[in-house]
Length: 175
Image (cartoon, rainbow, N blue to C red; front, side, top):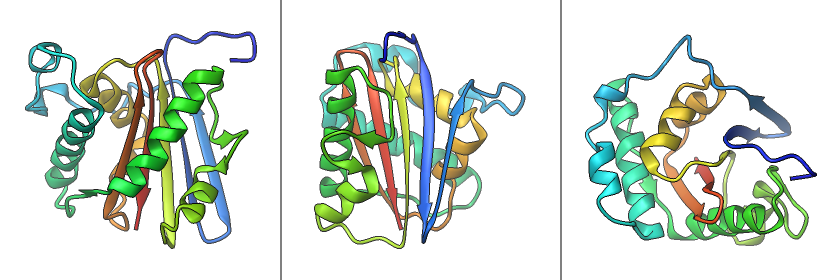
């Protein structure tokens, strides 16, 4: 990534109308999500190497547990949104660029529009250096901007992308 290698990063971006906001940085440990509330344990996740579809299903369960604990409606997985998220994760991993903007396709939101995915509000969480769903969820849950995307009541749909080479994730939300 531009001559700098990071072991772990998280970043978030959301689009509401014409407002675009992006947040990046260290995970805030002051408002930490409690890992004891997760029902998928590290041992369960380490038992075998999951497929991308299994990773998406695991992450959906974990995000919906968080949302349920605050009385929010569960998200559903979208195959088309997942394809866009997968392209995002694979490209970031291939070119070692950790960014919300694709040099080939533009932003995640431009990619969603090009794929015919309608939205009024959308967001993307990205992460680099996480090999399993429990780790990446905890990183996002402990970051206020990432947590806000996961807990936004306006979102109903989720797309998950993962590239195993460097543990790159793209999580797309759609209303």
